[in-house]
Length: 293
Image 1: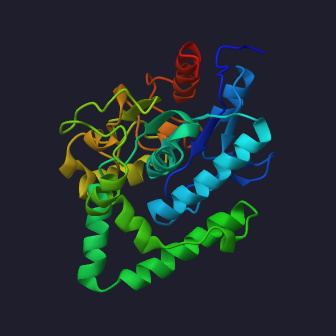
Image 2 (image 1 turned 45 degrees about the vertical axis):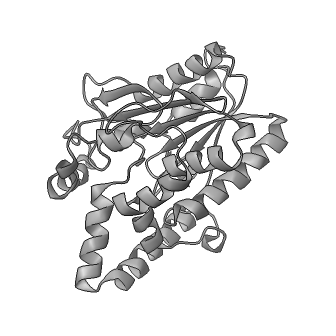
């Protein structure tokens, strides 16, 4: 086994909206962080994927994440942790850095909705204008229950509130969140944030191409979201704009990935010449290792 990714502190992942840990079984299933954690383990890293409500507010999801961080510290004896969050999970890792900064060594957001998404703003506005907010909440929350069932989990332990999730990831809702959790945010429009703050190393990376491989069935959804909404915010990964994804030190903001490629979904299908997302996480772990984190 390699020690290339052997960080001093464990790495703990936070999934985004509609997220999960693993759907299905070991023999027949799909991880949200597809092939990423096993690769980190083979290269010496101690890494954990948390379970968070697929649809809920940034604060509730953040509290769920913090509780699991405490469990990881209890299990491993670690005093600090390296945090990685994708999409809405960016709010979870930032929330944790805000409430337990003494236990956070680093934070990286991946395709993070750090300034919100115009997609969520448009959906919430349309639902309010058409009077379909409650119907939307019922339908999508039911889908959240299916996600929990597919993981063999009790949905009551991970409650859903689609309207809260939509508001939290909208531009307006994220602005409210950012007033309380400012760590790592861009210091200028679409600019870099502080590279370190309160002793915490801060990073981000994102893709900028909604469509990357015609063989990936999910690319059709990314293209539709881009055309209907996301493109209004400029370069984007199909959901999150490059500018919104800015946080701390930018590793890269031009990966030829879409929002799902960033976590190696679906099933590792990406652009033919695109960098391997699994390798990008491995390299980040090595980056942390070299900093003594």
